[in-house]
Length: 328
Image 1: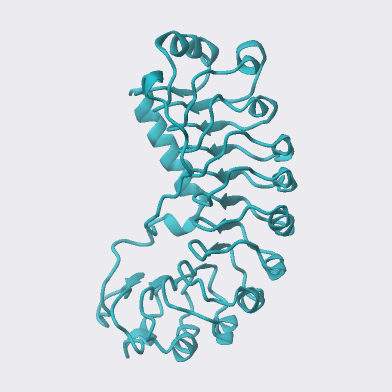
Image 2: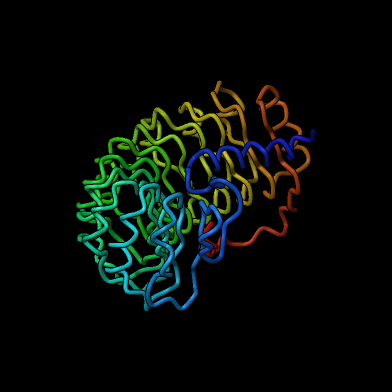
């Protein structure tokens, strides 16, 4: 198997294991309610719903429900019905033009994963207070034009995976708030127009997966060395010109630095020991001489990849990255 193939496989496995929401639950996803069939996953998104299908309350086996893109849905009465489903663990309410989350959702004890992406008018203070009674493990609040994180987020003590993609979370105070989530393990900060990562990132020692793709970062703060559980770091599509030297002082296991502006490996990696066991340097600007040197530096890593290097004479100024995403 080629190294690049191994890399893609490893990245896929890490991404899938990072969040339960991205796993397939019990077969195919149905597009309509069928009483006679056993249905575990149901996608009713963008269906112009004003109320739930009448037979949905009979689907006691249902695990996952997608109601996204139905802004005319009477969500208050819908949530009251959904709370009667004893096995409903995942609820997607993306792009619903929500201003508030129904208080009744607190009576849905089976819910562990909720997605509220693309609801920029949502009152997040009220939302986090309402959700605090649930044993919530995954929350997606991406693409909501957030610049700050309300203090009420710290009430979600059971939260393990938090997706903040497509916002503007750059203030140190936001990371102080994140530090109050005692079980936070996976954190998405991709597509946040970051030019600097606050040193307060070091206040998140329990985070193991950190996604910083599609920003405009040129360096990493020294505080990252205090992220003692950090094992996988996604830094693709940024503005790094060399491998951040501070990474050699961390215990990070796998680093993705594809599609940056890297023209050199850096003295710290050339002359010192490091823990990294997997690194992707695809689509950068290393010369042939430099790629040969890099192969020697990373010769005993489990995964090393540097495919499709670009000519240095094509290097232009790094533009801010802002890539839209499609919800998984």
